[in-house]
Image (cartoon, rainbow over all chains, first blue to last red; front, side):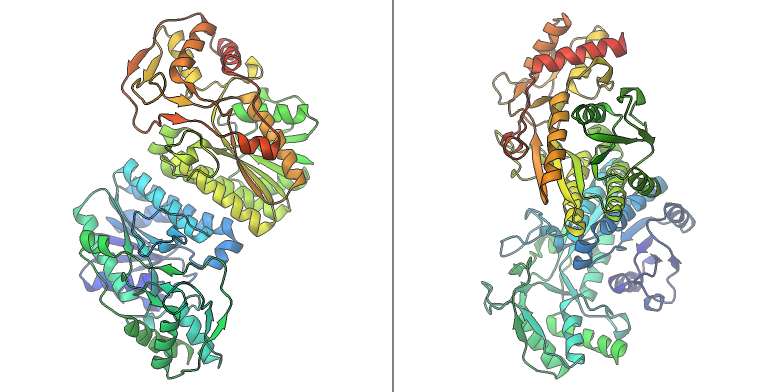
Length: 320
Length: 320
């Protein structure tokens, strides 16, 4: 097997490349470096600079490297940006996926792993989100992920490609400081950013119907997530058909709990300020992790403390 | 107002162009002529040959003709083809829509009408399908229409464009023989085609839980559908926000009833042969027509006999 990882120089992609090469898989990365960083990649992983919107390049890469499986992570992923620029998200996320799947079908590649998101569910009013929970995305980012899943399954059926869609919950942490997320769009780096600037962390709403009143999320360590990709890739090598699976810990952690652990790790324990609720935030979003355990034989092993510890070491490296 | 109708030389598009110009609206057509026929258009309607995937062309056309509203009908629309070539449907239907909406936003066009389909609903188990019935498309054609609606609404919100999505039920008939559907993908021309070749009409399944055991659909005359577009265009000129509305008669007609009327109209009354059910066919699919009446002040006026009469005159013209 030779695996092509699109977006493989990104935060998650580099962790996936590391986990797969570490387990003996042959890996190749395609990345347009709009957010990716070549230095994140293991030295023996070839990097092709380019976009999954470039059909000609994709054909050449799939043929020249005799690719037998694709892990498609390249995508735009900021919710607020997707609300402001929806056509861009449809063009890049869905257009890139369609172009890639065309090249994959033409090259006879038979295994395809798609990076999806808990955003496909929107804000369902359930305690645990299973893969059967109805999908109702509430922003263009989530819409492109749900329509992307549909396309992956349809192309799989039409062209005999085995497919897996992984629905990530809230990803945090880093395997090494060098691989840490350098953006400030997720809660952990957002709080780091405020602390670094001498500002108190913010909590948006503390009157939700949850144990401490703040929103509850399912956080997963990016190294666990990377191992889920390895398990999914191996599942694809042995099975045909399609599989859609939540990737979370199956445990909820509140925003206030996160802020408390961040205070312990950073030593900056200034109290959070409570601001009004943000429109569109679900009170609770926690994965059922049962299908991942049953089908992939995979479960998350790392806890919140390890996520924040490793993320903080990365933050200090990148923002000292 | 100047309205650009994409796909305006197609079967439905030409009826829309005719209804809008007939009511005094200024109209311009963009059509790549992959299925469209220039002779269908009224003589005073300018035709630009090109695709809604061509962003540069769209920009020029919107500017040069000072377009103030768009009626977007250009799309691939065959369910079986969408199952065989899903990436093509996503590229052309969604990619074309995204490219068009980008050009529309940039040109400051503030009114957009999107041709959607009852296919967004899939096969819901309800007597009357309202616009609140959950959407669960069962093929890539319907998926591109549902994701298309999402994109239309998101782009409307992001760029201040008023939008209407019209969910067509089963379209049949013709305003004149020249404008008739020349394809054989819908029930009426499919039966005509068999009769013309001396074969009996086919009914797929007569053991459904319906009054006569055959599937029930909501058929709408294409001239009524065209008038719904005119009503929607005028609604867009007066209102902001987004509106999604079923376009059907709100009455069910069974396949056996259709075959009987076709026998009466054509004079070829040979009995239908009953074949096994086709996978994926819903027993009943009938629109609630209430929202269209309430918001657009529009209701269908023409019945099944008129649909088949007019379709048959068109068939004789095109297939004599």
